[in-house]
Image (cartoon, rainbow, N blue to C red; front, side):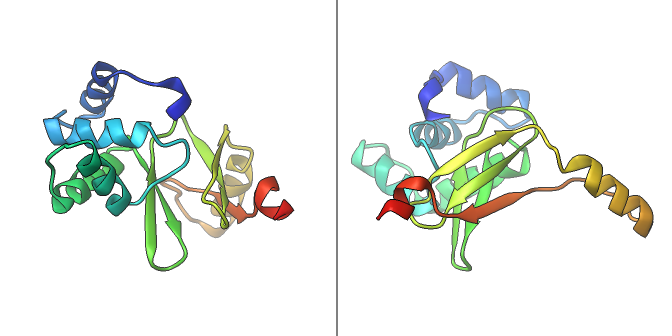
Length: 145
């Protein structure tokens, strides 16, 4: 998402469109996340905002990310058992390839797994309300190292 360089107004509109009040702190956090090509932790975003002289508390960053994740504006990507990263993705249903070495994230648009999931759910008498698919591995650059 970082390559699209959305404006502050674009980001505020995206929040509002998802039913999230575009407060100053939420827009600041989303703006900082939009600068990231891959993903970032709440702590990383907080440090970057501090370096830019943006006065915002770490708890506020966490609350903003939580609200945006719940509304579907931001994707949450777990890395191992101790680290949660966040990413501003494109719109529409998609999945991710996540590099365990450098945290590079590649967005895969569409969903070829949908039919497979629906068939399995039907056979099990299960009602699917949503799904996420993340494939973890090593990107080409990390494999070369």
